[in-house]
Length: 238
Ligand code: 1GP
Image (cartoon, rainbow, N blue to C red; front, side, top):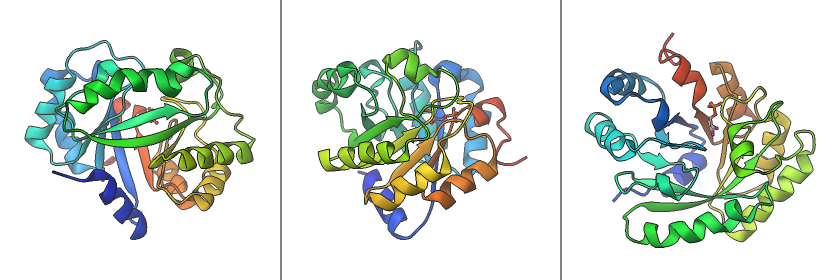
């Protein structure tokens, strides 16, 4: 059995940066996924994340099986709710939306998910999920009915991340939201990265390769790219 979290910790200690491509199953056409998978194989991605704020499709299992036939990257669920759990994946980010004050996304969905997860072999990675204001309303904000954190209040974002770490999160994820107009501010990434011990994930609104490097340079251990790759499968190899 793989141990994805230990590998992330090892990469962090070796200062090796990680990259996840986020696939929204609603936007992947299963019949033409072979080309998508070959582009992922040609990319610098180290992980595949699967999920979205709202996923209506039922192809998650099939999609994962297809990816696994042609790609050896670890597949990590990044679910918007418990309906997106698939035991075909390797791991799940067990998220709690720490920036929000909606109990459904802090604990209710997790209570519903726990007995389902107990029946799977998925590696459970507890993740403090922090939504940062990004210019316009994003799907996470709309679906979770929560207010993102003020993008200029870096100290509050840090306090939220530290609270997550103290509560036992194994990862902190600073999220601007999929397709965000503005990515997480670099100063905020730097402040959080310098003041937590656990690995830091950053995503949302990163639209070019320089943006990825900037997030790494600020202190992100793993960057998540969704929309940019979804819009252009040659994003990593122009
Ligand atoms: C969304 O952080 C991820 O949850 C990725 O965002 O789609 O903007 O790359 P993008």
